[in-house]
Length: 116
Image (cartoon, rainbow, N blue to C red; front, side, top):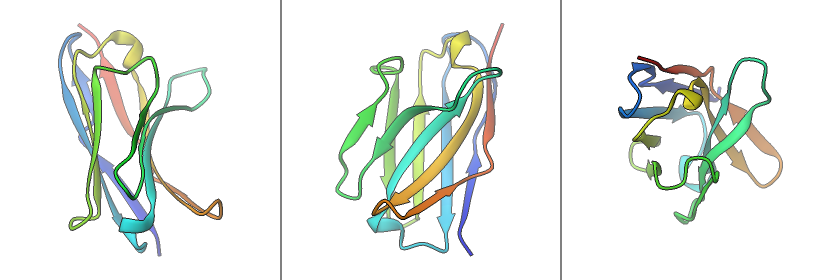
């Protein structure tokens, strides 16, 4: 059974930082492209960042320079370090595991709220 369990969300003031974690089980973690997506109220889910099995990274333009994605294959965990947070970063953040256009899994999401 595949499980992706996110943690680290919460309430933070504008300009603050958060580090999200996603622990995976039930998959061969090292071969998957891992990603973070987010969905704000009334909006579609959008890409935040992805990291391939080889360590290649891709970021949405809206978060470039403020967000860093990383992975620890030994721990089957992917991280999202978010700095200089803005109110428009408020959303539910979802972890995704993707392989070979066939295997695609999602976590349950973690709420990030940026507000003073």
